Image (cartoon, rainbow, N blue to C red):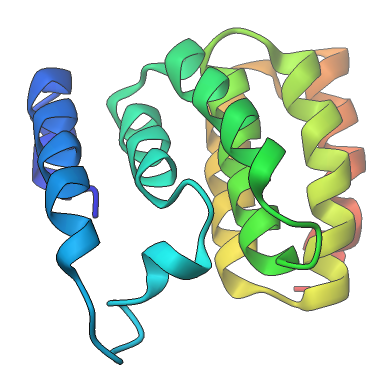
Length: 155
């Protein structure tokens, strides 16, 4: 949903306008294609897209707040999606200068990533590592490396 070019333009207003527009159109989507029913399978589908876009825009605090809301409604049984969203939440927390929260979330994501073997989740954890790069030599950076060790060792 989040068109990379919109995020690259750093244009939050356009992101919000397009997602709001999609919200008006989405109820009319009724087909059997896998992408067509994603909104029915994913609680808070459009807010997932908005949080993803905000994260790509570098709006860490805003993205983190949305991820907290989204994760309240994503069922624990949707482990792969939940793990990806949690990893994005951790990256948003890191971007929002909340590295301890990022590490706390990453610990849970690492468990899910190892159990599921999700490549998507591993990519999101790589993005988290990049976001935490400036803190790699600090205690919180070492805590992150320790938390992600089971994932990186399994690669």
